[in-house]
Length: 452
Image 1 (cartoon, rainbow, N blue to C red):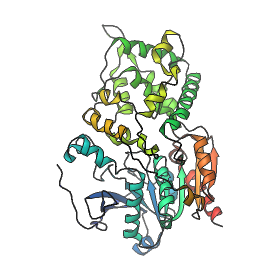
Image 2: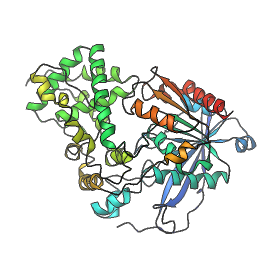
Image 3: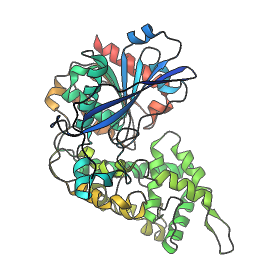
């Protein structure tokens, strides 16, 4: 078992600086408690990258305010910038930006099938990962802020799950915030809106997005029918060792949550079959591309922790997406083919069968089961404190977001005092990437108008 470090939490480690075209990058390392309720206990190491515009003097850089970016997920490392573009381009006009690899991701004491066995067995692994939710991430951010800025607050930009973390930040440490900017990241904050409720709203969105895709590319409905028939009769293993089953195929609907996702899905499907001496078979290019979409090798925490981000009432999540799916029989692909109906695709869901089909999850199967059965999840948001909020907050809400329910987001917007919203159907869930500079600029203006 890995030996615990119990040293006093340290400030930024040795800073390494590198240059890119238009950018100056600096690496930071921070030691923080695994369990913030036991600060003298084990420490883990976090990594963050500072990004500033090139051409500024050291004195100019020191005068810039900070913007912390919280990545979507859970389980995804922060952006790795190459040059100045998108939302980062707008941020660098006036900020020094910190890209944080949230605990367990990227270079922040990574948690995956290779490293988790160092913790011990599945029970120890599940206990360890119980400290990887938004409340712990917020405490990490506060320690980092204090070590970098002292008492000064910073602006936080939260994308998707990063926005969930940011709302938790607003609940528990608003004194650390100068302004809060949310992109597709307004969670349901009522403890009664559990994972079951989240997925009861998600499956109808998945159906709408699937049917809209087939309306745009009618031939894809026939291709998916053919794929379902093929996978019913043949076992297919993808290039990463993942077994492509019919439910796994349906998860390609995950692509439909982004602005270009429908087009990417179409181009993927049009290469599904190739002629062989034994008849049509799945093409190698198709199998490799599907593996890239479905793989959890780089983000295992997404599957292990996704449902826990909705857990606040002490109850186990108990594979909510799988249980709730049974309430929507239209997603039965076999019946859809038999009855000549469109096969509905799914999206941002995790299921117990993935622990067998997905190669990167098989070694973590028992750990995932223990997390799904875990009770005692506490609240992530303080609704009373949010109702008294004084921090400027601006949020872009995507009108028919595949991943985050619009009605839940609007209810939360109404519950946070002073929050200003921009509701748009111009973008999908990836608006902060697709809209880049323009989206961030509007969020900044909304927050600053609200400050007055």
